[in-house]
Amino acid sequence: MSKLWLRLPVRSGVRLATAIVALSCGTLAASASAQQPPLGNAREGKIIGYTCLGCHGIKGYRNAYPDYNVPRLRGQSPQYLYDALKEYRSGARAYPTMHLQALSLDPQQMRDVAAYLAGKPVTAGPVPASRMPAQAAVCASCHGSNGIGVAPMYPTLAGQHESYLIRALREYQSGYRKNPIMNAMAASLSATDIRIVAAYFSRLRPGLHTVPRPLFKWTVKK
Image 1 (spheres, rainbow, N blue to C red):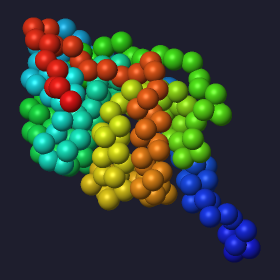
Image 2: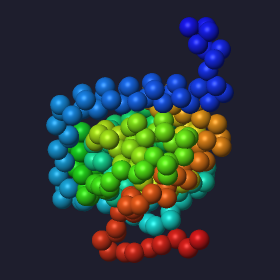
Image 3: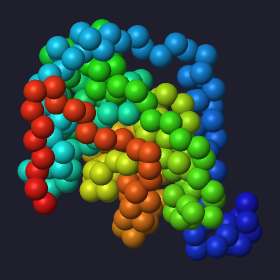
């Protein structure tokens, strides 16, 4: 084993992480495929989750500090949104506003809100490998070369705000967000790698977009 490590190139950390993440994603996706996704009532979710649109229903809306775009949710996997709410509730994702929002919801209400915010999930064909930067290969194992999660438990990244993706990866690196697979994957990326990965997935189309507000159409001017 020691001789093998001595022969590994400088970028071996990323390659090793790619192999580990690919194996983990494949195993978890196979397990998830045997389970039914959480059933949510989008009509109920529209009523319960109306306050979510105060941030996620405004195009270009940004978190005040630290400064980054709040994520686009329409087109996302409802399973992933449900799982994210559970993580905010448990503290696996440390964000006070979202923690309080999640605490106010029971499991069925979280499923309903997730179904409403997600709407119709994004679909797209594969992206040729030649178009994908090497730094994104480790991400494609779970999130697809086209930025669409390979299983409902994995989030779609296509069209997501670049600044949000950068922030999320940095939080996984620091342990601010707790997820064994993502913590290990993010640890293999340099600051430059993170910017390249975020730029690639944010520009993919079709992709995520802002949840439409039923009564108002506000846009933050750049």
